[in-house]
Image (cartoon, rainbow over the protein chains, first blue to last red):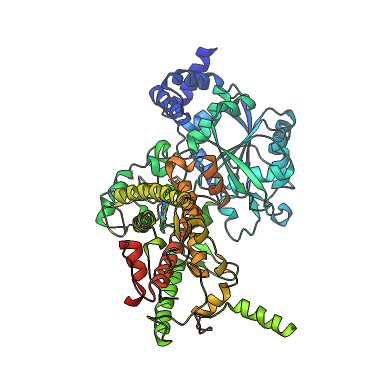
Length: 405
Length: 213
Ligand code: HEM
Ligand code: SF4
Ligand code: SF4
């Protein structure tokens, strides 16, 4: 039993070059990511050890680049995260599964009919062209999502596209893409949705949510929602124009990158990189002036980090481009500018807010100088023009009255 | 409209002080705001943010106090007069301001020769002085939406969501600064176009009598 499962998991880990110690360390990082105490580590480890292949799950791909799949699968050398994700019995995972065509679709349909599964959804929901931009097995992606969402216990949206449409919904949004929650609201499907943004999704966050759901909340959607502190952000849906409330796990998306950034000391000191390839860059100064969106981006990247917790964007020298934000492309481009460009409208162009402001300020300043010269020319300064005897309004009224008489 | 005396009744000492506080805070907020927007020299971010965070509380308290005082302090009803009335009546449009908006615009556009009859301030100035109140509070609202300790309060977070996220909030806050810069340019220009007597009274509390022009 437990001993057996124990053995099986460690064999699996050993085959992939992961020691028991690595595994326990990994469980520790899950605990930290979830905001749980160290004391939970043995429990998490035990749960993962005994829980393998228990929970059916479907992974659906919407309109996206499959980067989130790449991010999670890390196919060249699977790490602990990939193995831990094997606690899920992924019955359908287009890009990765061995089954194909009818057989695969059949398994999927059976899973949906049986219920009791988690739906992991990657990519945007492309509503344009009646869903014709994405057709699988003769049905549009919209139909696939509706069917799978209706019977799921819970939905995990992986990556910014699934959250609100991501880069796919960036202007001009030709595919009329939106996020899962917005679409489900529109369709009247009430299955709970948890959002894990960033482009692509960080595999650690998927693992953390799966562990939280299956092991901490005991495989119970209601308990999961109750036990997981959430941040709610309200957006206007990109397609339907409705207000949509999105849920984000607070432990992952409750603080800005800026608040946890290792370069923050340099920020406060006023030590900035102004140019790439400079001495300041070599010194590891803050990337604020080269467009870092860390102050506006609410993700735990500096804590969780990326690529097997090796490093992350800012640590490795790139300004954060805000990929974990909402409407993140329109709100964060140009990537190397502090503020985003403003879109002046169809057929017009993008402008930096600073340019608009400087032009307005310059025009007013010049206008006042010209006006001052005009006042002088008109002989109004310094004495001022003589004050009128009576308000224009009163004079007109008097004239009217006079005429009436 | 220019050739009148400037008496202390127009701006009692307490308002000279609140005006000074406004000016100092605004300069601090705009300077540190520019710096936060784009640090144009090194080594000042900590100070700039500290400055911004202190001045923002001072200016809000000062403005609120100024509004309360408007109901208790008496000020002159007209420039060049010692006749006084509760300040709020002279701050809000007075009866002399009525129907005078367009004539005032025309006067400043050189479409009208005579200076329009005006109350304590002309119609344009009245509008501008009143507008500074909601504008300052708007700066506070957008600012607190960006301010770490308050950004996740529902009252502010709701506004951040409404404008489409913290980036847009920053841009609105940044444009708000420019509205103040433009206001200040026009305000200082209109106040001092005929002479610097208004500056003498509001900054140094020095009276000017009519004949000194
Ligand atoms: C009255 C209450 C105000 C509050 C609560 C407030 C608060 C803030 C906060 C929290 C920031 C962000 C600082 C950071 O992220 O490090 C900021 C930035 C800024 N503030 Fe204010 N502020 C106020 C008034 C003003 C005023 C009156 C001005 C201008 C006259 C101003 C101009 C700016 C500018 C230009 C920025 C930089 C925006 C950017 O990111 O480009 N603020 N303010
Ligand atoms: S690099 Fe970015 S996130 Fe880090 S301190 Fe600078 S601005 Fe903030
Ligand atoms: S640091 Fe910024 S750009 Fe990098 S993954 Fe995190 S949110 Fe995305």
